[in-house]
Length: 226
Length: 97
Image (cartoon, rainbow over all chains, first blue to last red; front, side, top):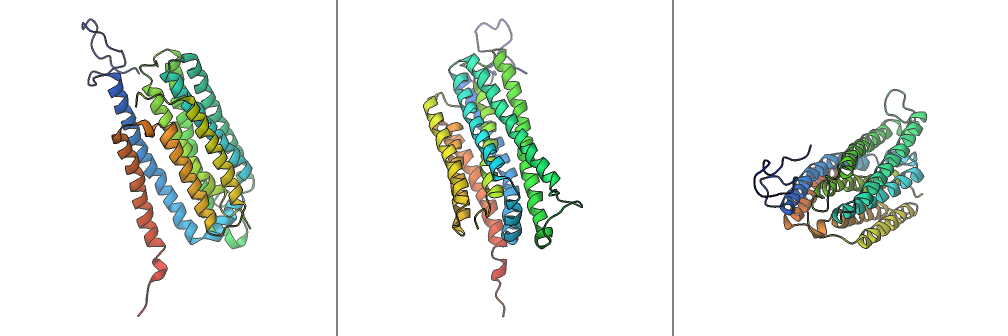
């Protein structure tokens, strides 16, 4: 799990155990990690971007059906979830700060807070999914809706489940990463010198928050007026 | 990664702005502004995303190479959205004769 030590035992000069031999120092290694994480996030931007594109195409084709579908979503629960996720981004940012300044105890508590908020988000989301199931708003043979929009509103709900489902999957992976970081922080592998794992885990967490920042208005707030 | 340690005060300020913007975006959605509703919703979302990227994700304090990668992702997303929508939205403009 821990990167290979820079040099075998008894090499003669001391290095930080986390420093890989092809880097000059931990700062350079950290910069490379951040860049690598960002390159991964570019692929994620285009991955979610494809779904946003499909949403835009069908929304411009069937605006009334999309508004009708959007009205069925719960703005209150969606809004609470937005606040929960933004708060989790704050605790994550503060966790990076605690790691940088070497406050191990604070770091551990902030990681736990981030995970609790992430789990709360998923809990609220599953309540919303359950309501949709009860209302027969799952696209497919059992789908029930006003006759006027019946065919096209299924496109809206398909995109709703696909986009929020993929986002929820990212949240679940994020909780896995946070568990990993919690163990590393607990064991004292993360230090003020070697905080890069917390930093790049934070980049992932904030990215997932940004996806929701766009999903919330596009899915829940569409055509609320009138 | 930069050696720069962002003061926690910055994080709390950004958090407050993000929460305020969430409230505004919900409030504006219930007022009928015509096509401006979508523009307002997306404008606020972009503003929130930029704040998260610059401050929570430390891009403001990152190397120029990181900047290039971040701007590149938005640029390529823009190409994908603009060219595809440029096709779909102009299909009705066909002229006859």
